[in-house]
Length: 139
Image (cartoon, rainbow, N blue to C red; front, side, top):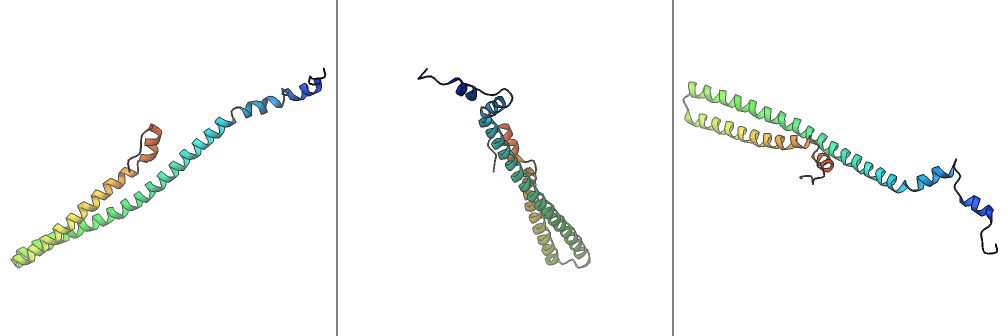
């Protein structure tokens, strides 16, 4: 018995069923529990960033849609002004100027609407969806 361990030391080393079993089972899965928490935090962080980007995109969509509506309205007013000038003055120069203003307004409105269409795709949280589906996000 000189080289052996005393029986009292064996009793201390053995896990206590009431308290030690829980500590032993927590020690084993603590690695995967930490990994699970880290993964959850990463997903929540990604969701927060994507929701923030979607919110900013929505604000831009509203602002650009209002500007687009204003440009379409001014194009309508320009069209009416051109019609009045054609009927009253028969001045082709004024008509062509009005047509140019209308065309310019409609072109700008089309460009703005194209931007609104792109920003609307960001409202679908593409990075979160791509991550959950295991794909790379676009842009």
